Image (cartoon, rainbow, N blue to C red; front, side):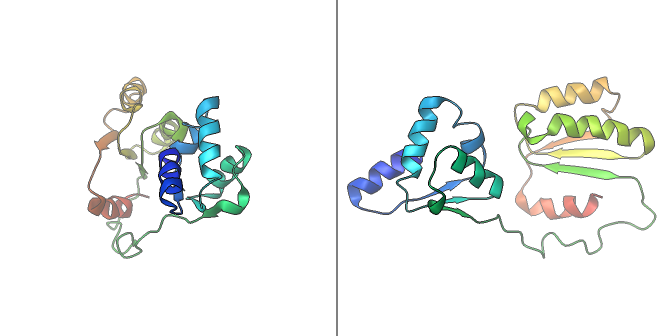
Length: 171
């Protein structure tokens, strides 16, 4: 997108600000031609905004001018995600929650393997994956193979407004 935006910006003499969220840097910049195109475009942007220092560092390593890169973290509404009234009294079993794309690069397989150890020590423990992605079937199959199918839940994508309650229930 930045390549097209920079071309249009040059034609219209409009400054371009590009946003880098994650996959666009970590995955899409691996092929050499795409890496060159992206570096070329980002070095012509007025500014490049990333959501983490790790992405900033990856862009710098790819040759993007550090002076163009700003880190602005994603915001969170503390009212929607407060812990007020989160846990029913007496409930102690771990309730793990993952929210995001179900990708190998996000550590989903490692989380499931770690949960296997937790589940062995805590019979009531559960793990909920909220989101979807290419690893869903493999994760589901691995949960079954580990004997955890009844304790690992795949909610799929859920409305943003429901996330606060899911975070409150997790621990």
